Image (cartoon, rainbow, N blue to C red; front, side, top):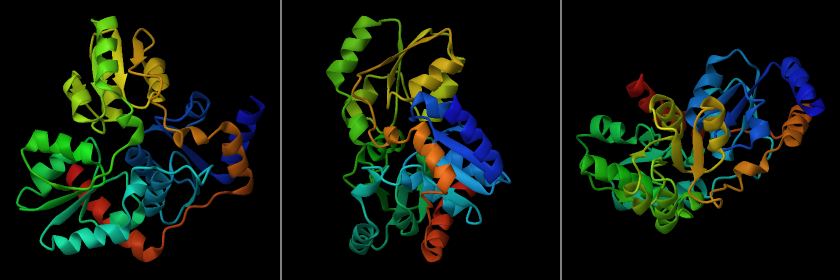
Length: 302
């Protein structure tokens, strides 16, 4: 409680807003001004009059916040909290792929570095990827989809479109095995199964609904079912349980833990706010081009 009180004091002193991703640990969830998915958090922070954004998530998320709020100071409590999937493609690798397919448009998942966003025509989230393809890119003959091959496969199934897909993936979602999900369904036959689009196809096909993290939070509030099996990073279960106290949530496996998300602790949040560490900056030229890809998406979704 002493740490939490000190964080509150510093938040007021710094005129800061604390953003917490759904996959963070419970103690960090509880200090967030906003808890949600990466893009939604950055959008909310841009609307505030805060001078400082404390991003409790992974590095590409803090970069996105900086891109959308260039006049604010953005800090991340642990600068080593990266995203393995985002790091599976570099700007140079994407440039080389574009050279091989000069007529293709590039659709990048928000789970990418600022440099990759800057090389892309359009950004998407797991919630709106299908809409981006069906509406914004409907007349394009070739689409490069980076970096998540499983999200690309999900969108391909939904739209009937083929993509030039990068061979990236989320290691945490890849840990979920079909036989484990089958066993959970056997143990809890009345439970609904919700899965993230980053899951491999066998997991998605065993699920009742495939949906983004924010979509999951809305969905479980709306359905009458009391038991839900959750096929995504298990950190979200804390929020789901908190918002739905009368329901029971089961992770498919206890291995669905993102080690990078779990690097951030209350102590690190406190230290970051005390010393204004670690600042996240994106070069202006890269930020400008990355912002265009994000804004093309936001202009449609608005």
